[in-house]
Length: 410
Image (cartoon, rainbow, N blue to C red):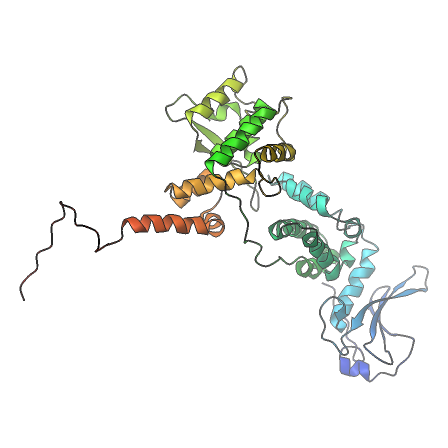
């Protein structure tokens, strides 16, 4: 971070309020070619002013960019103290020399994700929601308000708080990736760290849990569209895997030459850092194994197992409209029921069947912590049912094979 400039006349509000009122700002040079000014007003708070040299030996235009904390406490955004105003002035002046915008920061972030084996869809998610105004904003000169307005705008358009948080988290990761390589941008990190703060209580998700009858109906409607989509949907319903995992299944991942058929399910790319794709066995019923073997006949072991009717691999956005059509045909609301309902239902089905939480987590490529956080209600129902079997009920009749304990005389 650049060394801060001291100025006794401007550092404190007391000193500034003792300055005579005048139209011309009081300037102090804070960097080469950059001056920070304070305009003392007759009434109300003074204004911070930025002036950059024009590059021709003259003084450039003056730009007012924030209120001084003369009568209000500094908030790091619209009201700044002397030190914050210095940082903002430096960042703004350097923004003119920096080509990095909020939108362009997504490119190196996406490249970094691909290099580390992460999910490039995190960058695509941000691009889908990024407004033109924010995308073109110079990153070094962006403000808390810029990011806060964008975040709040997502929520105002009906996007779920948890989705807003996932999107803002990805954008923060992208901006931090660029900031790690540029000290000028890093000096403005607080703008997005504060402006993109997570919406509280967003983890209170509304997971849709479906009964077996509804799931069977949805799968049936999926088969009416095509055998390939039907099989993708059935495999999702049986295993609870994400579509991104199912799309990477290979023919050799089907292990059906055994009494207990299973799929060697590839892990997802969720999580931080470089994530190596591993495979874990997930049980499937013989009926699904037969269907999968039929479509795999004649194919090489390392080719994809589940493919679209065209023979192409399933991509992230391919299944959305098809699932909505199947859900609507099943008499359900596609705005509420997505393909993730099959995953949530699979997790709850196993929990209520008495499968240990750790095994459920492994089968669904998630963590025990996430299972407990997201499905605590169903875990509570399951724990209640287990504990109830061990309750001592003095009102129940004694079974014939129970021997009363002998008492000892005192």
